[in-house]
Length: 247
Image (tube, rainbow, N blue to C red; front, side):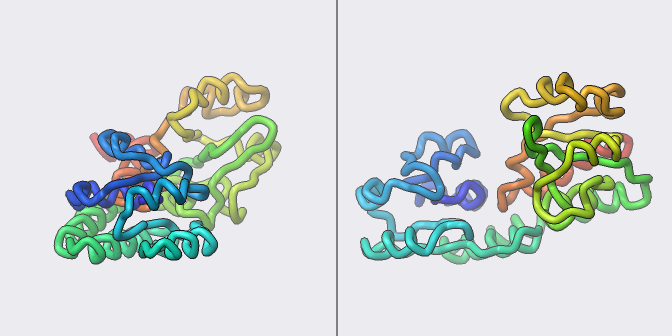
């Protein structure tokens, strides 16, 4: 598996006995890290893949045609997941992996459970007032956030928040606009100890959310990886935005 989302799905399908190799980024569940790594997602070690001699390599949409050709030249089949960046895309990827592994029934069960959780979360927050939310992807010299056309941007809306960057496409953002919008809530990754850097950073420390202690951390892999945990990611974000709805 050269896709962290696919690796998570393989484990959720209880099919990890098929897994002989992974990418460096396939780190969930923790036991996946015991599987031999073949390197980065976009630059895997082709020789190591050949040594492992898999029947199939599963990759995600950003996997290059050149890499597909190199692996297929070794007589190894490659399945590239092309689910769009949405819940429907995640469901499609899970179903496709389940089909390949002969676990369609289990795949359908995972998808049904995800849909149920998404619906439950949306019902809990749908009538609540939406606080303004800023999702930090990067900060410092350049600011990056989740624009309105991104999956994370859509999740903020479904979790009962008002994404202050909903009017932009993509990820680039302006620090000046952030200061002007002055969001109620800031959410950032729980990796890299970024919260302390953000809350003490020039300009950021003056934000209302920082002053009121409304800067929160989340496991962003639950949001960014297309797999079974994305519904959990929606719930985790909704609990940050509307803790009162989950008491």
